[in-house]
Length: 369
Ligand code: NAD
Ligand code: MG
Image 1: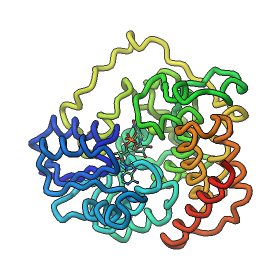
Image 2: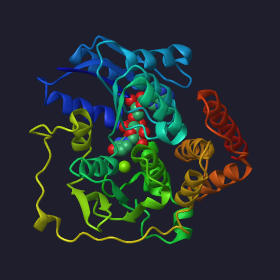
Image 3: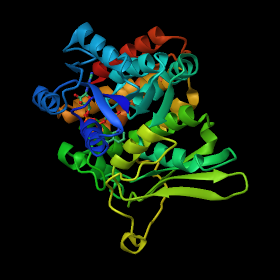
């Protein structure tokens, strides 16, 4: 029986996580839940699950320091073995660090933790004795392929659906509406990651996430567009052999795997795969010149240090403004580009550096809008 905390329990991944836990009451006990908003849903979850700890905790503002403290309390709760970090954005970083320092397993959906504080997360994992297991479907796919391998891999390939604008002309994409951008072809997700999937910034975040998770150089991480979202990731070995993980798009499988890795439980409640029904699986290159946010994110990753933190902050600000109808879709990448061009860079030595770079990039991004 393992105790679980779900940070961001009212969101897309949070709700899917509770659905997964519900199917395995003999294996998991829900100990703590937190949410940044949606008090009604949190109250419903509290009534249904009766967790030892529940809090409406916004790590950024609303809840102020009390909110941040609640996230950290849930992440380090003594009865918790596994922390599912399903908070969206930079607000999730401190909870990831705290959980790893406390020796917990972190089932990480909050990829922004690794993007903004990768070296700190790695240090917390090594010195705190915790474990880091990805929830992101592509990274779960890679981990599942690697878990059966006796040799290290030489390259990974992450798949991208291509988002709603995969085959649109650049001019049309620049003026896309919020509704169009939220209309993802294969996944139903929270609004921020849906916009990141439309700009392909999400795939840049995932490349950086993969770099830290699997300790691979950027030259060993490729991305391919795969509109059907059936193949979630590939792993290539030195001899040229390639393994892939497949399945219909559902987050419940990677969530369950993050809870049980390296074991597998009998029932993830997923639709069984039928290759004939899946029919054709197609692959195409990313249009780097059209999806500028992707190219900028990769460049920030390769630059390293605090550049990915600045990239992430600029993206979070631009996406929030786009969702509020205050910015054209095409301006998201422009804001990121200007922020990164002005960013002086620097190494990631401690959390203070990361918070400073994040705040700096947010302020510059806001000033540009
Ligand atoms: P969401 O917006 O649906 O949910 C986010 C949750 O975090 C909500 O419970 C919200 O109340 C809470 N939250 C938001 N801001 C907060 C703050 N400042 N402090 C504390 N709590 C806060 O988002 P989501 O789609 O579930 O995504 C969550 C994370 O998982 C993101 O990092 C995303 O990139 C990643 N992810 C999501 C999916 C998916 O299918 N939704 C897939 C892969 C990875
Ligand atoms: Mg993903």
